[in-house]
Length: 358
Image 1: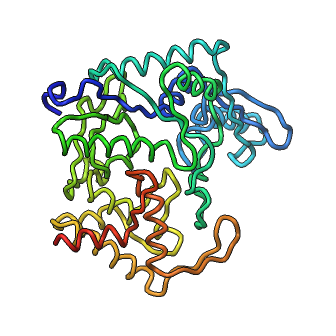
Image 2 (image 1 turned 45 degrees about the horizontal axis):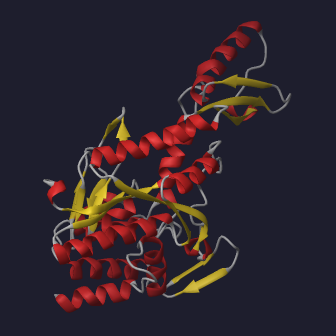
């Protein structure tokens, strides 16, 4: 954003995703390797990674295992397949937590310096949220790696006590940060001054009006060095060089409602034998110019997919049978980030709002 310093209030606060800061700091101080365990004998062999052990191919054998098989063939000994082994992850962390804490502090200080703000605080999520209790075909975020880096909990505690961290329960830290992001937008509309800026990697933030800094780095350099301004328009959408959909604003919310989010195990259509892809979505919405038309398209797509509602066995083994609109509202509750306390927004209310303005 151009000329940021002239638009911020004296006490403008940078609200940071401390969950990500803590995870990055703890992970950076941890080395990951594997043990290849021979199932029949129980013998363990250490390797840097799977590629070193059995190569890059998903089907054929390469790497160290291929070399061993060639030697065994020449010697008339048995060869091995991938199925003969189990992979055991090994994590080696630094002994001193102080290194991790210092790394997290350095990240926070660097963020503030880059953005040019002295006032900062952060959000730390703890425990399950309301989304974890929704009945879905797959458990919310259930596919994620269960491993937590050593010193992660201690780093979060440090950020909470020493760097203005606020613990968030019931809702996610991302919801909490989104509320700060939206508050900054509302204040800007009223006064022309920015009171809150959010620093987050969460792509859900891209459909909430406000001021956002994505602190993703590549080779130590911020990939997106400028503050992103997300307004209340329909936003923008495009395909990158890889053919992936990128965007912000209402377009991005529509994208997530129809495509879902593999990172969080949000699957609008994937468990029902329906085929739909990013390019199809892009081609169908790229010429839509109003939010009323955009979200009407989303609703119509759900009704074309599920004319008789949806039925499934949930992750908790319950038999679920709900209407099409109820399923759409379920996905909306997973995707939509709360903007105010006890946010009452539903998909139906949002659509009605835009239709009334059309």
